[in-house]
Image (cartoon, rainbow, N blue to C red; front, side, top):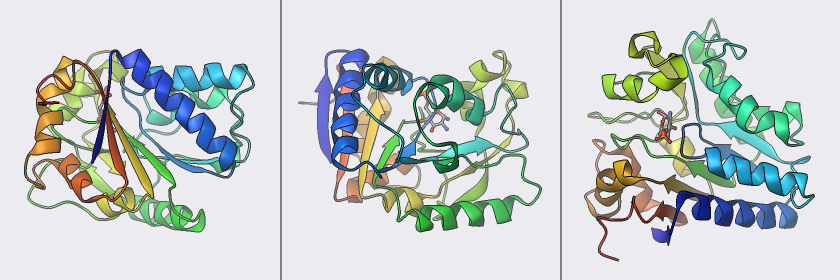
Length: 244
Ligand code: GLP
């Protein structure tokens, strides 16, 4: 894995937005995998700024979000779908029909997961998968455990993850759904390029374990070590336990 370290989260966001803009200019039909969470917000802000400046055009791009809470319709104020509309989709010129977010309110979640896998395949696979890093090492909602799901699936969230997502639910962990739909590990690892972004002191320990430790289902992000084109972009705080 290549590691890139920036002085601040903003510097990392600016550099990554610039790189994505260049990639989109070279390849307007880019298929992007997108994360939610606090970490990508500065990146989305920078992409919106570039778009407003006329320097990035999303009109032919396709996006697939990583995950969604089970039971929440897209319009629910706490859904990841709403998060994405607020932080990116409503402010750039992505075509609605090329935006894909799992439907957490689907009556048949297994069918919804299959539909999503097919949509990814129909789009020709993900070109650039952007990822955040859960404090417990999860990517998407692939939680640590004795085994990891390969494909898009329904999963139970750990207590720590529900706590980490409480801000979206009025800071009430008990309100965070107990289950989610998430792209699987194979879906993520089949992306042609993966960029994981992690910032802040709170991510330093898990980032070091992901990069330097063994590959284990107890730390799903450690599987990125197997990817031929994976990059980890850190700010100085998140990189403080790396000997670089
Ligand atoms: C959530 C998301 C993950 C995200 C993680 C980290 O649980 N499902 O995709 O990477 O949170 O969030 P943050 O960036 O807020 O630390």
